[in-house]
Length: 276
Image 1 (cartoon, one colour):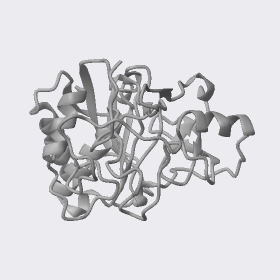
Image 2 (cartoon, rainbow, N blue to C red):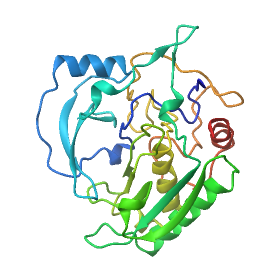
Image 3 (cartoon, helix red, strand yellow):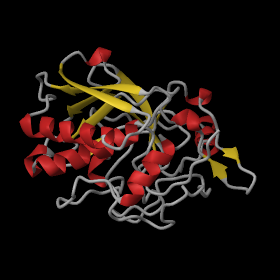
Image 4 (cartoon, rainbow, N blue to C red):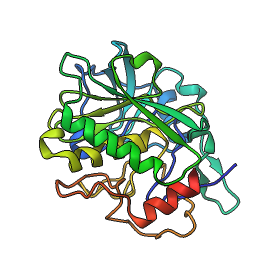
């Protein structure tokens, strides 16, 4: 098992924990005020998730399915279904926790779909170009993981589906891998493409980064509000060759600026190549 520390990119233990920027933390359908049980909160703690202000909300996916998620108000959302089947953080020899490679992607070819259907969910030409550039950026690194891109409406057949979700504004939302497969839904807000191709590329790169198992560079002190997304108070193991501090130029910083370059930082490249 490969132990991985956060630099710019850390894989977390929970299978489908949803992410992202301050603007991103918005549920797509009406929320349900359900209080989690004591057992659910204890399980989240064992998984290394901050349990402050956790509620149970409903989120509707592009395929029409509505799922319940445990949401902690820090951009982390864990599916209620299968919660107790998730692995806990394991103790490393140095007393830290280690992030399990189980939550990275074991498949070496990933099919990516840019959704072009109706209902306000389809990518416009700007977002489509941003997605093309994002996929090209990943593939240009020579990783063991390869992405094959197409456009259309057959979301059932794709590993990752990039589409527009209203309510996310200029941010996005995605989740982490489970069982060696990438998280399926990479959502971008309806305002993303209005900020141009480069910004669209940056947001899509970021959300796809979560889908393949990467976490915010600044998860412990978000640049949006200084808050901690939650890791159970446990440290992480450093990725060799990367900075031990926060890389503000990383594409996995929690809050993208409108002047974002849409490029990987040196540490992003080092970390991606270490993981894949």
